[in-house]
Image (tube, rainbow, N blue to C red; front, side, top):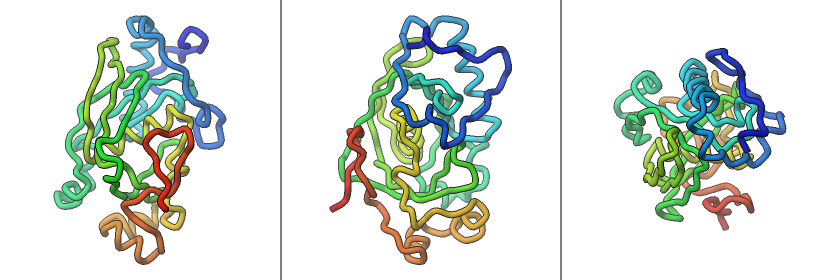
Length: 226
């Protein structure tokens, strides 16, 4: 619970925890809704937003800043996708996602078999990127930063961001779902695959697309391909 965790101090940004830290592999503790009104939680959310924006990233979960709390912040828009052409953004179904806070989220796919594969990375896994199959659309129930209920369907790239961050709250990294043959350094990704369809990389590197690679027994939305 929130009361049992030492929240960070007055600094504007927070250090991002890197893979190998046990906090990234624990199921995060629920946030007590009444604490969302406290100055400490409001300040934490502001710190997470600033940290995410400066990283830069499109999502950040509390375990990534060393706190085992079911809390994540999300945001996507022109500053984050400036490197993409209009066609590349359209293929990714990448639309503006205003700043969003999810507290104690639960998540279900809209369709069990509607998967789409793209490269993704993680602020807690530096220097690498890899292809992950994610559900095209998910329904999320949660609380917002004011403790109000959220019941929302995310689709396209926003759904990918949500699934990535909820994974963090469940003690998982994208590496648990990645097509291992797709893993690339950021330099190789930028020079070889960033401007090409994911299927081109799949053909060259020898991996499958648009189907999941594994099933985590603790996950309600992952499936192992047969």
